Length: 154
Image (cartoon, rainbow, N blue to C red; front, side):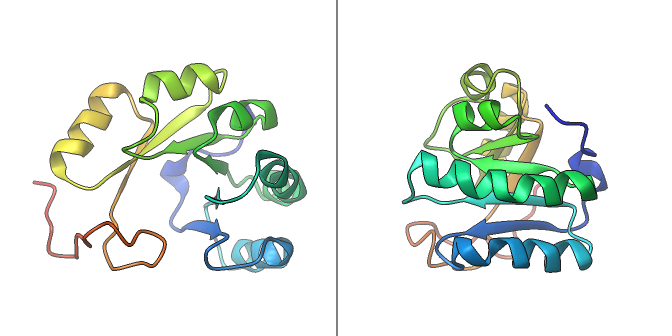
């Protein structure tokens, strides 16, 4: 994997999602995000083919590498490993952390969680980071009830 900084240094985690933006706009969006201080960029393309995602990621990798910002591939650990991405992110309905790590040939793995119980389970599985949400309603996750800002992880 590359030598990008860990997510601990990230103050802003951006998701380039085909549900919100066109991949041909991603290089310019990435430049703008980098100029704005983004600390990590995830590619999320739920309805796209692996060759498409791979092409988009390869186009962004030099920008992210130069800025020492981690690349995160959503859902596809084999692709993350092949690209030598910094992280792979998996959801609750996807693979376990261990299986994703194995398929990615050792990538660091993040896991989506939607409750304290899921967050604790992801921690026990050895997730390198945990995503918690969605905080607000989002058209890309219409089946998820927003957690809101009041939800506590205590």
